[in-house]
Length: 145
Image (cartoon, rainbow, N blue to C red; front, top):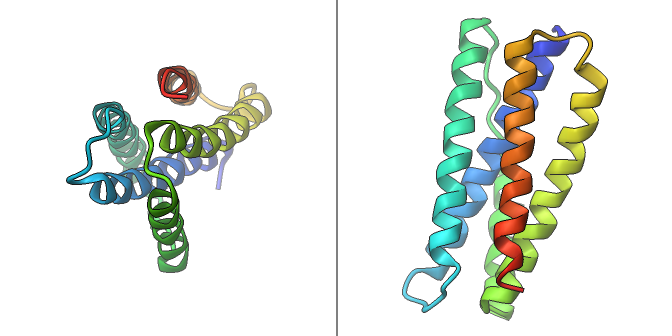
């Protein structure tokens, strides 16, 4: 597989897992009075957009899409439920999301630096946009800390 598709697959997997985790979080927050819910919904919409965009580009390249494993989904779901049950304050939820998104931004930054000379401009632009989207989410979540 070429580096362009590897980068697109990374964006796809990150966005797919983020969509799953954020959806689970919103289910756990249903019926609770958290101000952070609207921010989480907006972040989810952004990840859905990147999931769709990366999926479309991978399909155009005839790359078989690999869903996140059921085990990874279960671990994520259990982690979210445990954190919300332990402390469902906006600050705690923001902290959990910041930690998760931060890991993704570090990985994305490394991948952009590793691939930037070897991939087409459209893929690089998508990767940089995704990275900036993640950075913007970190900033929007800090106000809840």
